[in-house]
Amino acid sequence: MFEIIFLIIISGYFILSVLFIIGASKIFPRISEDELPSATVIVAARDEENNILRCLKSLDCLIYNESKLEIIIVDDMSKDNTGRIIDEFIAGKAKFKKIVPKKEIGNLKGKTNALANAIEAANGEIILTTDADCEVNPMWAKTIASYYRKDVGVVNGFTTQQALNGFSGMQAIDFIYLLTVASGAINLNKPVSCIGNNMSYRKSAYIEAGGYESLQFSVTEDFNLLKAIHKLNKYKVIFPLNKESLITSIPCNNIKSLFDQKKRWAVGGFDVPLRGAFIMGFAFAANLCVLLTPLFFTYGCLYLAVFKLTIDYFVLYPVHKQLEIKKNLRYFLNFEIYYILYVIALPISLAFNRKVAWKGRKY
Image 1: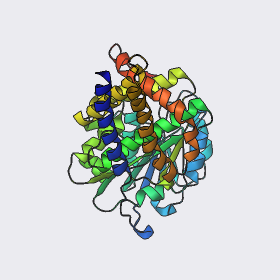
Image 2: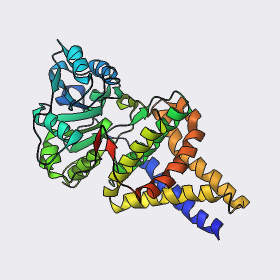
Image 3: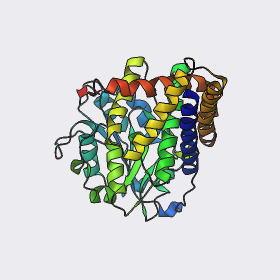
């Protein structure tokens, strides 16, 4: 009986995986260099003295028409040396601007309020966001902006993480796996998630959607905004697979910070459409079946468990190849163990506690 249930679940998991790859592989038309719109890059930083300089240096290397690019760094009430580091780095660099949020827009708080303040001050037609712990590709802004044909309202990009060992490597692969699912779903016009550290949107679309102040508060404010723009039924929301728009972030350095990150994302996931819950349900069921295989052992179950791992590799390999980070796949087995455990453990944890601690704030 367990083998039959496992077969049904893995069949659905396989079909979904194929759909994600089809969606993520979709090619989108681009505009020429002389048509590129003006752009504003926004980074909201809070207590990031250990990371912000790396981010600033990469932003300073962006290849974009200087007259069309501005970079706004928001010091979100940092209590460390983040503000001083920003001031020292951007001194004499005309394209950089630092702001400190001086007002609360609507009922916004934390990072969302910092972003809303920066967007209000932005001059660019296109808003690009990343995080203080991220390093951008020099072609990042130019590549993202090149997808902004007149009917496009949101363009997302892939993010990976520094893969230095088994612990960071599994996180890097997990980022790519989750964003492949997000890309596939978005490109099939069924958005279920996105990530704010590699996201962009038309400022006019942001305003039409009512801005962050009109959205219900969420610890995953990026996806809330994407959904609002998508619901306008006026703009395309796309997620191209392009190595030149790849961003690299810094992995969590311990189990606690990794769990807190996953928990924040999971709490934000309660706002996903029903299709998102359907996808997460299949992931939970497939991983649970793999975990239970030793208890209900048959060779059929063993083959299905191996097939599940093969499906995941089938999803990951072409994306890693396209992004030119295939070397990270040496940590694939680390990722699988991690993936199986957290997909099962998180829902159980959230049943008892949905409070989130993030950047010294509690939600």
